[in-house]
Length: 331
Length: 102
Image 1: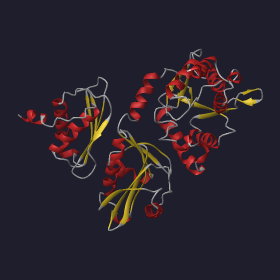
Image 2: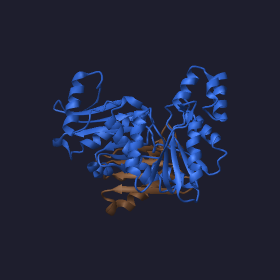
Image 3: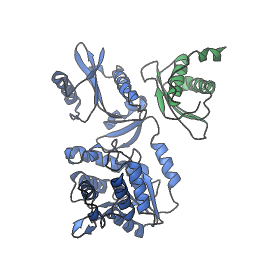
């Protein structure tokens, strides 16, 4: 038995062997991976698994070698690059029917849909995140939630939060923790806190790795390069996780989102939220706030920053965000 | 030793054990064991891990254990490796084990 790294983008023969194995296992040829391992027996590729940073996916073992501890060897081989990346907290996507096998290999279920199950291993796990939420919750009922990247926090975000704050006892604003945006996570969360400081019933929290993260919703960060079907699977999973693991802890009954005329992936996400949350929870889609006939969006703000049109930012962002932008400019 | 980050050691292959460890605030030692032989050896496995943590002067830790029939020596070695990694210590002093057995 030979275990080795496969170079899918560089070696066409290995790619073909891998593609055949994926097809046989009924898996999509997901190329959003950065490390692939294969196990060979008599020059035949009998098993393979891949990583997308700290997410394990594309796991397949040929029928003849299932139940032969090959899977365990595969996971061990994938752990090596994970250790180099200093990732002890890992995620895994697989088919729901394989849950018992991966559970016996030390993975715990986070959420599942009809087509996919999302599992994790290591710390800090979903229970630690839930505990941190519990510590931050207020004792009110019928609360609202908004999840935002806030890159950066605009008057559009503020409008959404203000509308929710008028209707609900407490509004939980979850700010995406993933650091893949122009403004880093710490700055984004700071600007949101500053921007909603005048609203006493708003609590700002990080999403951690469990809401719109690169683990739950990788295509969100690819925007419109991802196939819609894949985005839909991930959006459904993300919505399910929110509904089952997060909403209850904060006693959230309503989720607010902004209408999305521009980004296809966000539109798919809004539709998935509606399908998953209702009827137990409600989803309120508010039209975007407009200034001078044009919707306020963070992407528009970023464009203005890029073009150094700072004057035009005035009507689009709260003072605190404006100050941050001008401070960064002078740095 | 004080745990400053989450870490793991070991595998889920037969006769091995996977030990995952994280800090635990001030809640002492918490061990969660998953083993096919938990009925027969669960208490012994947990006792071995607790003793090893004590020898390493770890007082606060959340430990998750996936056991695939590991012997005591394996359990001890994997626990030590996980603790050293979780404490950010690169140089492992394996000789110290001898002093525990003395």
